[in-house]
Amino acid sequence: MIDYEMLRVVWWCLVGVLLIGFAVTDGFDLGVGALLTLIGKNDKERRVMINTIGPHWDGNQVWFITAGGAIFAAWPMIYATAFSGFYLALALTLIALWMRPIGFDYRSKLPNPQWRKAWDWALFAGGVVPSLIFGVAFGNLLLGVPFEMDNTLRSTYTGSFFGLLTPFALVAGLLSVAILLNHGATWLQMKTDGFIKVRARAVSIVLSLVGVVLFVLAGIWVAFLDGFVITSAVDTIATSNPLKKEVAVEAGAWLNNYRDYPLTIIAPVLGIVAGLACAFFSKRGNGGMAFVSSALFIAGVILTAGMSMFPFLMPSITMPNASLTVWDATSSHLTLNVMFIVACIFVPIVLSYTAYSFYVMRGRIKNDDLDQSHTIY
Image: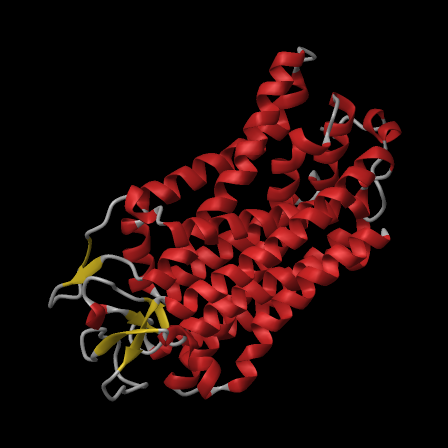
């Protein structure tokens, strides 16, 4: 059996992998939906765009479900605190995500242009709203979440929905929108031709550069934010209890890991370089490399947030000592160990069938394909 300290770090890494997997796979689904009314100029073009993601979107959401399940099982305190505190934001996210399967299935049921236009905007909302909220959530984690914890380890959220919409959190939200919509644009470069591909290239160039600018701006901003530091000794193998530590709030503390562990600088450098590479490959018309660069851009952004905060998972701005960390917010040693064994079996299976589905569904979608099968949206 792996020791408790190592398992806690392993599950921090595994949940990060699941989040990156979700952002990379389902991210281009969200991006294509959000770009539907911008890149698609008529009904046929929009149908082509929808059908590029038609075979994949439901399978891609497995990553989202798996990440949520992993957080519930590995970090129950995070799950309880986040889902109660961010309840309205998560409800809006789920409502927006519901618009996608409904929109895909019902959009083409009627030939009425107004009917289809309404579903196009529903799919737009289904792409933009989750993208924005995911970024705002990460932004609030860096700012600190207003929650407190009593002696029974029961958390109480003391903030409000509109309190989440601070300037820094909105910048993080816009960064998320930019990189996920860009991911959708690079996907369209690979999966379409003609005017859609040309427009997707132009959109990707702009969004890649906007994403890099927002990423750098957020990084500079973080340098001046109040970060969190554990000031007491930490027992990394003790039973989880967030109240058995002391935490200080210090300006610029989120940069400490980059000073103490210089190799962590790879994450933000990867994000910036990959974002610029995405714009370069889009300009050159190399959709495949643009897509890979976009995926690395997303990974760099998520890794930067995770490495900046480690070992914090959900810091509390109102009661810093109750902040949830890798060392005191996890399930038991046995639970993490059983989950690790299950993950070693099923994560490769998920990766395998995901790769196989992309291989089978390779190729570009064209106008002529729309009338070839009754399964086409």
